[in-house]
Amino acid sequence: MELTKENVLKALSHVLDPDIKKDLVTLGMIENIQIEGNQLAFTVMLTTPACPLKELIKNDCLKAIEKHLGEDIEVEVEMSSHVTTTRDNTPLLPGVKNIIAVASGKGGVGKSTVTANLAVALAKSGAKVGVIDADIFGPSMPTMFNCEHEQPGIKKVGEKNLIMPIEQYGVKLISIGFLTPAENAVVWRGPMASSALKQFIADTEWGELDYLLIDLPPGTSDIHLTLVQTVPVTGAVIVTTPQKVAIADAQKGLNMFKQPQINVPVLGVIENMAYFTPEELPDNKYYIFGQGGGKKLAERFDVPFIGEIPLVQGIREGGDLGYPAIMKEGIVADAFAKVAESTAQRIAIRNAEKKETKKVEINA
Ligand SMILES: Nc1ncnc2c1ncn2[C@@H]1O[C@H](COP(=O)(O)OP(=O)(O)OP(=O)(O)O)[C@@H](O)[C@H]1O
Image 1 (cartoon, helix red, strand yellow):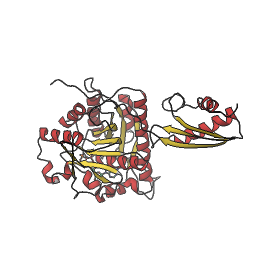
Image 2 (cartoon, protein in one colour):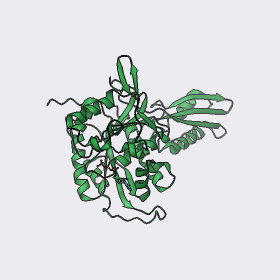
Image 3 (cartoon, helix red, strand yellow):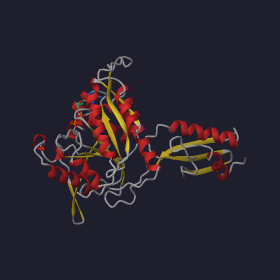
Image 4 (cartoon, helix red, strand yellow):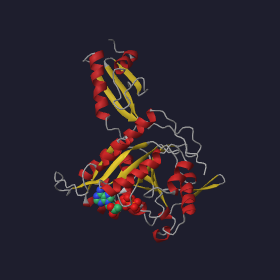
């Protein structure tokens, strides 16, 4: 076949996006085709910069060009991304492409740790990321991001005063911990906590974001309902540890999102503290809380299993120091990067299914 734009598109129409199971041309993922002599360059626009299949898709493109257009073409493929959204028509936070609720059943399973590391991992991949610490009764994000003493600024936009999020490690962050000393937060009553969350959503200058992660309080509470009633949520991620008591509580969380009147898609389950491993001996795995609980939970509820994070001393130390473990190369960073990629992948798949993201109307 002759090297023309049309034939390049024909050749690339044989390459499938492995997740969405449609070809790259139909999905509109091929852009900027340039041809000069026997030199060809084009861009593949992925659905997330954290795409775990980047190399696979690139190789499939190279193979398709070779097979259908010949071996003597010099090909340059640029892998870029444009994060997808189903939130285009929402009046509140229209610049935020995906809102992800991070929930758990039991407290202390590492939901905030996972949120912080996921956020930094996504930002490292090139995405624009924000975090709302909605764990109003025990905000830990300011500590985990080492910005406990920061005070968010206020910016007047028209008639409105907007809160400026704190930026740390490439992530925009807002937490009740910035506005009131941590020891006071616990006395907040439900309605006050709900109105604080509403403010974090509506009165914060988020700008353009690919992913806004919401760290929810453990269990099921008014805060969860406030969230889904205030703003259309793209999906929820459930964090659990493998032991029976944690799984039992995680089920309640899952059930809440799956209730017909709430119906927030569950993107999947992340199993934290899946096994203990000493960082210097990563092949030694000790399943101190039992094995495979998260996977079984995902199977039972027919939702994806996103991945697992080991119990490692460095993760706790990173949390306490305010330097998320993802930032230090090693097995922990690899585990968080993998889970972040899988989460981004689940979001892209959910968006490809084109279900519009709606907020929940509950008549009390
Ligand atoms: N994989 C892990 N390895 C080692 N320590 C961890 C891991 N995950 C979390 N931790 C530690 O466990 C403690 C609890 O974690 P975290 O605060 O993230 O839990 P949480 O589920 O958000 O709690 P809550 O919402 O009840 O406040 C923290 O000290 C944290 O550093």
